[in-house]
Image 1: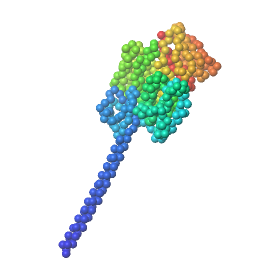
Image 2: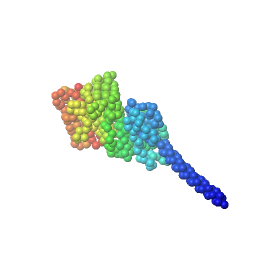
Image 3: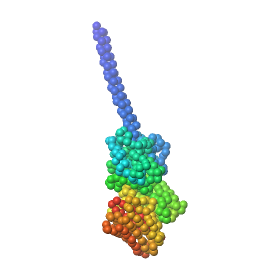
Length: 468
């Protein structure tokens, strides 16, 4: 009897141990299931694709870049528009040659497309109109209003040219986010070239896009080609609220023809230090540009053997664009900000001050006609068509500047400065003045550069006047 009780106790103990094992196994399996579900969730998240703009230099590691699986949508100089998943985006930081990266600002809400209102707004305009809208996506009903869709280019056509003289071509982006906006912008530029029409870009932005310095850089380069940007004043002349360094772009101009002969992308010194850029002048002589950091100072060394004029365009973190004329053939430049906020490029002497400043994207100026070589006979100078004015300028005799300006804007301000920034002529004509004919007597040794600024609330154009 006692042996039976002992056997029963052992049986019960065995059952308890087996039950405990089952419970432990269940807990382990449950934990493993949780881990598996978490990994599946993370894997799903890592596969979610985002748009981004990245900036690369000429030391880009192509193999490492390929391994992050970035799908390149469009290329804008040294800025690429890409699609990439979140895990691979983190890996971009370790890819050699990737200087900067910014994810898109995207609105999740849907936005309305009023095709008829857009057509009426731009009726009769002899241009191509591109609308870059980042306020939200288009529903299927809104997409149905589009006449044609170019999905690969992120563009939909609202209207085409037709036999109606008041018709024009109007395009719009399909998806939002800065990388998609510049992808659509690239298509719009090429389309405008094929039909030989000017391109007008209407910006519908929240303002956050201007905090992306790469987006501003791309738009500014497009603006420098003569494309006009429209939109609310806080957008088209908005500030870039970032800590990005000053970016410099270099251009060579033939002073006789007023044409750009060669130009570079925008670069911060830290992005290309210990590297060299070479630009070719119209006389086939070159300008070498070296980026270096010495004794804690970031410097740019210029060595120009061409007779073409070297210009430096600086894009600051605040969204201000400044143009500089570099007269020295051999010089070292250091970007600085004066106490009053004015940016200068110090050349070891008195500094090189900008001859013309404006906010990013405020491009009511014709970049190709910034330089005018003055001869004795007055010559007509092309002004932006929006001004409605006509300008003739010349140097009929030594140390004399002659100017004729007609159809004056009521609120026009006129200023002429020498290359040291000193004002030699200023005028703010009253509303009754329709035209100005004047001869300005300059000081001894007046040869060189003078800068003419014409400014009104709706118009701003600047010229460098070269007096031989």
